[in-house]
Length: 529
Image 1 (cartoon, rainbow, N blue to C red):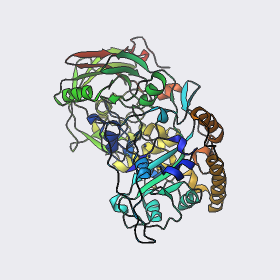
Image 2: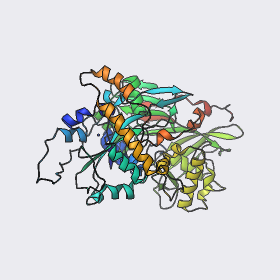
Image 3: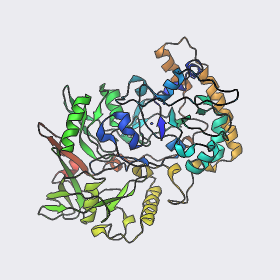
Image 4: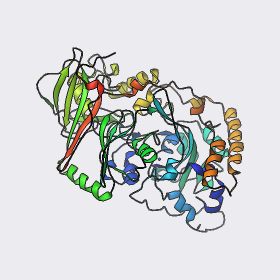
């Protein structure tokens, strides 16, 4: 599992690494440790499907600037790498590489000022954007990698870039093994080896709509989450997340998410301020004492009577985040009640009695009334009936391929929490932008990156924190010679394209109840454009 590190300024003050020796969204399996709340765990490769009907996820099959980019302790203040730097090196026989034991992962990690200072926001065209920044992704060697060379690992598991890119990254000093620069990709990995990859990171934009506080006391913070913003760091998102925005703009730190919402879902979102209150709520979840109520706008005239759907749901792809009704799936139940109908679409109240991935969205699709602007479950990729009644005249592989192709054509792969580099030949014939570069070009870029990094290392040691931050703004450009994203021209989404008509209206427990305002699209007189 690839681990992400929090300190952006390590790129600016690399001279410290030579003195002290020195650590992202992780996949969901690592998120439990990263945020230390039981509900934070979910399965899956690029993190688990990033859009759960009432839960958030992301799927981890990321490439090395993906899975070398993925993972645990996305904000751990005491990083494994920092601990590795503080440990005394064990000496072995001359010429033998000695691997230090891994540091135990600590629970209860949170994000601090040094994490929030990695980069800054700016607002443009109704969007919140993050300035590109340097970032370290870290991991201990996986068991299946032991005895294999770095070259083998990169060529078999991390194919977002050609080997020429990783060779250029080595020459530019971007890859480290046990905090020593990698000199040759032929080096054979050992158990407990610690890998670090420095990359230039870009985050997709989210809505500029503010996160409104609904309630706050000594135990809990409750917010009205806008659509398009993930709850916590995952996939390509770190600063454009609720956790980071609350920390940077509201000084609300060390929060424990008590439940999740899809990135595209808006509404009531709760955070505990203490581990004790977090555990109390999770006990109520386990005892089924909590009630959740959503509102959505669906296609067509939904039945006027109450409708209960108990169809089992199966995850088709954790990587892309797609589910469907299937007898082999997990049992679940959702109760629906129509609130209004405007002649074209219906507003429906939804009460999920279980918490499966994409439960509300999948059940509405099965009933023939998908959420009006659902980018996955109201897609033509499902066939003429769009999945109604479970009728999908395609294999799972064909469905996934067609979904990816549709969003690739719309330049909206981020809706699937994918980027071009994540696409394998099985999903599309496209290749990563980096793979289009000739090896000679990468060598030139590596030389340029080395020169730039050399300037960065020359930051004077006597500068105080404020001066270093100012110097970093000059020496940390928003473009990087080795970064494939820097060479792409992406069209910004429209703010309305970042909204899905699914809203968490109410969250109720034995001794609390929080309600958010009804969204504009749920009003009785609302009309489609």
